[in-house]
Image (cartoon, rainbow, N blue to C red; front, side, top):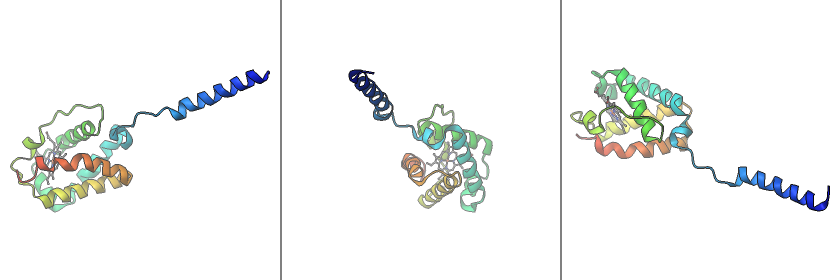
Length: 144
Ligand code: HEM
């Protein structure tokens, strides 16, 4: 192989490697980083388990259809983390109006969500991204 051909081949190899490594990939959604539908379902199931074992928070859910809560919460988390779902439940105001959820109980519920994510082996940095999405919703549900 001539010197020119060798140089050309080397440049082609370098360009191919660069195309896969240098071109920046679009960042994955939080939904994808979590592990998609399977992982969101696992988190919600862990969360319901946490609620069932917390007397203070379970008190709010005494009359709740847990299967519906399970299904709508999966849709809700999916949509808000950038997943390919449609939310078919009620608005946060409609659902939580009349519950008079206190700030302390909201924070306690967040702790239960953290436990649920930890049990699903979600890394802490990713947990923080999920919390950053849901924490601002507190305005739509406390003391209403
Ligand atoms: C950012 C935080 C929260 C989110 C994203 C959220 C989301 C949801 C969703 C999607 C539903 C189902 C809606 C439907 O059935 O159409 C729901 C229901 C419910 N949520 Fe929340 N929620 C949050 C915080 C809380 C807190 C702090 C409490 C109480 C301490 C609470 C108590 C309830 C109860 C009791 C229901 C069932 C209502 C019923 O039986 O009809 N939620 N929530």
